[in-house]
Length: 178
Image (cartoon, rainbow, N blue to C red; front, top):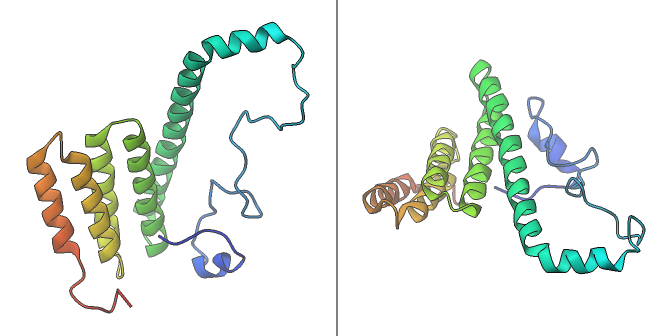
């Protein structure tokens, strides 16, 4: 679910909600670590360095992207472990939803790195958590469908099973859909 931001979100989350680790104190999204403001200062002045960067920039870009995914994975995995422990100690719908969203994000990250079977496992975990919530059937179905899409090429039988779970999880009444 829904969008993030706005001042009313704090009131909607309730007293047991955790702060969003990806946002600053005012709800803004901070720049990525290591980002440099474009003020023109900061080591510019050597034309030879710039030419060298242009020639070998592809390898550096790939390494930076790998570093980004590795750091993202480590942070998300750490958050998952913390939330899982907190949820096990004192489960609440807010923590269940937060943990489900974290599994979805881990699944998305794994998809970005072409680790489809692992992504399917994260989407399945998110679906199980969503299914335990009173109004989580649609989200559970969507996550089972995401798992299906991850498994289509690597595990057709697993993909069919995930699609069956997606269909079975669809809400039969219209109360959730209103």
